[in-house]
Structures are given as C-alpha cells and as structure tokens.
Image 1 (cartoon, rainbow over the protein chains, first blue to last red):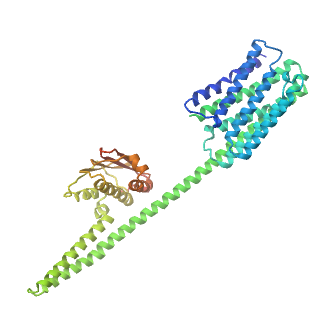
Image 2: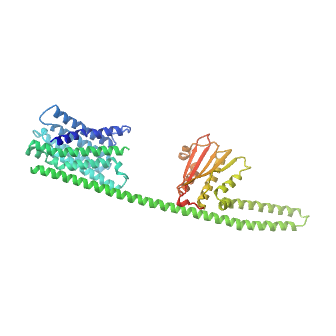
Image 3: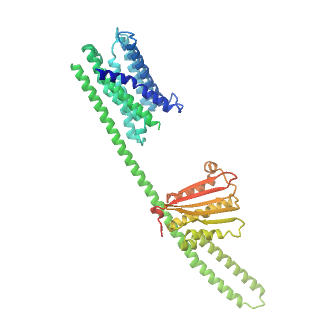
Length: 219
Length: 268
C-alpha cells in the first residue's frame, strides 16, 4: 500500500516537471495563441492546476469526493486538446471534425450534468470519448508524419513526443475510464484505489514523455 | 473482481497497442530517413561526377585549343611573317609605297601573333602545365611588373601538387580575383599567397583597394555576386571553400581552401 501511495503522490508531483520545462525552455520564444505549442503549455498547466486542486481537496477534507472537479477538468482538457489539434492540423476538413468531436463531447457532458447526482459521479462516457478523440488524432499525426516524411529527427520533434505520451496515456486508460463508474459502484473502495494506481503509472509516463519532448525539442 | 481483471487486461492491452504503434512508427521513420539520406547522397555523388567530368572536358578542350593555337595558327603566322620579310627584301629600293605597305603587313602579323600567343597562354599557361601552380602564379604576377600596380606572389610552402584540373582551377580563381581587384577595387597592391597543410591547399588574395560590403553584394547586387557564386560552384567539385572578408574602405581578403580529396588527388 505504501508503494501505491508513493506512486499516486509521485504522479501528482510529476505534473510540475513538464510545466517547469515548458516555462524554462520556451520562455525566450514569444509564443502566440495561434501556435499549437502554446496549447501544449495550457494543457499541461491545466493538468497541474486540477491535480493540485484534487490534492488540496483531500488534504483539507473539503467534501465526500472531488468528482465535481473531474467534470470541469474533462471539459477544460478536451477543449484545450481540441485547440492544440486545431492549430496543428491546418486542414479545414480536420478542423471541422475536431470541433465536431468537441461539441459532441461537451454536449454529452452538459446533458449528463442535468442528471441528479451526476456531479459527484464518474463521467465514463465523456472520458472514454475524449480518449478515443485524442488517440485518433495522435494516430493521424503518426500517419501524416510517415506519409510526408518532413521530420528528419523524431527525437527532436515535440509533436512526436506529445502524440506518444497521449497515445500511451489515453490508450492505456480507455478501459479504465469506460469502466470507472462500474468499478466504484461494484468493488470495495480499497480495490478501487488499488486499480487507480494504474492511472497514476500512466500519468507518470505521460508527464515523463512530455518533459523529454519539451527538453529535446528545445535543444 | 471480474471488473478489476477486465480493467487490468484492458489497460495492458491499450498499452501494448500504443507501444506497438510507437515502435512501428519509430522503426519505419528511421528506415525511411535512411533511405532518403541514401538517395540524397547518391544524387550529390552524381552531381559531383557530372561537374568533375565537365571540368575535365573543359580542361582538355582548353589544352587542345591552346595547342592548336600554338602549333597551328602561330606557326602559320610565323611562316607568313618570314615570307613577308623575304618579299620586303625583294622589293626595289625606290618603291617606298610598297615598302610602307609591306612593313604595315609585318607589324599586323606580329600583333596577331602576340594576340594568339596571349590567348594560348590564357587558355592554359604553359608554365602551369610544365612547372605547376606556384611557378605559373609567379609568371602571372611578373606580367604586372610595369602595370603601375604592385602584385606580389608568396609561395609559403606549396610542395605537393594537385591534379592538372585542380591546379588550373586555382590558377583561374587567382587570375579572376586579381582582375577583380584591379578592375573594381582600384587596388595599388595585391598579394597572392599559396600555402598548404597536410590535408589542404590555401590560396589567399589580399588587396588594399576600396573594399565592399559583403552582405550587400550577396543580397542586392546579383551581378557583382555572380563572380563569387561562379567560383563557389566550381569549388564545390573539390569540396573547396571560399571565404570573403571585406568592408568598405578596408580592402579585401579572399581565401580559397581546397582539401586533398580523391577528386583533386595529389599528382606527385
């Protein structure tokens, strides 16, 4: 149990690393909102803020559960990722699909919010849809990279590391997100926490890969 | 517990799927990049071979033309000159008008011979062919002895020889740079230095002329930069480098560096 706790805490702390790397390595570049790397920065900052809120929630015992913030986090994260892909893929058709996907996820989330007690429950449908959305566009990036062959050294390509990190995190978490509600309802709390260590490991992987990507691409 | 097992298997499956895709992407991308680099290298090699063949053909053509001029046209002109001299001697002493015409013909023949000789030397200097680059440059600067501009040549240890093409290339570059200094920079003193390191030859041409803004020449004045571009493109064949140092009012220093590679192999 100690190891699991350590992994969970490390996962929270690891959110600081890509944010600090981003600030340190991109401080000299005047990034504009229209540049997709800005949205990478917003996405990792968003993850850090919500992780800190979640941690504070447990430390200061603000309520029964912090799932309210998960809903807000999902909305914020999906929107930021949609903007990231929007500025990265410049094709009109893809942009249409990106915002179509975003509207679909936000609509489902909004509709679900009208259900009684939903604010304090998991959001398996929207989280799984978000995972599919990100996995799809990460794969699309790989396809484009291999078909265009414009990137000579992938280890210095930020989008390669971002897509790798997203594919590992969202691909690995898809089933967990999909069955998260069932898991909480049908298993003892301790089992749920143990299973969510998988999520912490994937979060550590995500933050490590993003940090490597930011560090390598800025050199 | 079924749900836990499902989640664990699902997560592992998702990770395996992601890992397999990433591995495929990395391996495929690396192979494609290697292929691309290989193709680019082949294209570069082909272009260098083409350039090399062109330069060799040009050198051969120059040598053949110089030979033709020397052995053909010059020999014929020499024969005409001798015949004209004999004809002049046969003229009666009182035919002044005929003598004047004959002397005019003789001086025209002499001028044509001088021009043909100069042209033959300009194509491939005989000194370069027989004694190499250092002697040829020495001979080249001696032609400026009475020209009002001091042109100095310093041989600072050019021992090994380049191929005839390589030496002709450096000779032509030196000649063009000196002519540029005289024509555009109005220099009163020009120095040519030739030195070598174990793996490369350096040719340096310095003048005390009016100099120029190197950025401006390459950016705005295409015609002025054309000479340097030509030199650079010819040097590409030998993997050589051209370095231009100049500023308005500070003279110009141009350094040409040619490595001893297979294409400019040492002849001796």
